[in-house]
Figure 1: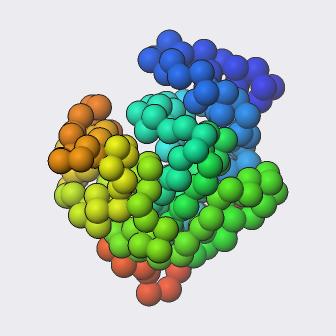
Figure 2 (figure 1 turned 30 degrees about the vertical axis):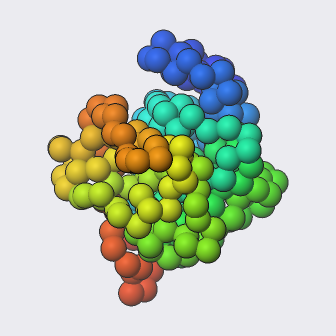
Length: 220
Ligand code: SAH
């Protein structure tokens, strides 16, 4: 049943402009149901965002595919993700690049994501609990950076940690109604920006929570 829904979703993604075969193959290979709370498992291959713990969301498959395609990653790339969430986006990236470094500010979410990476034997994903605004200085520069929560304005330190010739994909905007997705390309001299259209992400929040309260969906 899920398999049929999965191939239906892949067809839908092709029809809506996802043409990168490697990205489509990664979406086929990674079981999205492993990243979805039990209550929503039957909806794993609907083209919709789904709630995870701590009031956060697992992005819509179309957005995951669009961002991954825009990242133009490759087998030798070192990639930083800010906002591990369920771990789904990192799992997709793990199929397409050499190593994924992923940062999350909710420890409970990160623990669940780490368990999934282990179970699926995704050994090229490395995690960090902390504030993604700081990036990951010890591992910088990164060939690719993807941000899956929306900062209100340019996160300067992440721009600094992007390699020359690197690509970053991130939503930006203070409110959900005004967020836009950007593809940033760093050249020798400057950062070139391309806007990919309106999106709705949870906000990128400064610092880490005082203590994880588990949120509304804490029991999943
Ligand atoms: N990539 C995720 C989507 C998660 S939603 C997935 O595939 O499921 C965005 C995530 O960004 C949330 O888990 C939220 O806690 C996290 N986040 C928000 N601000 C952050 C910050 N400053 N540093 C690290 N993670 C952050």
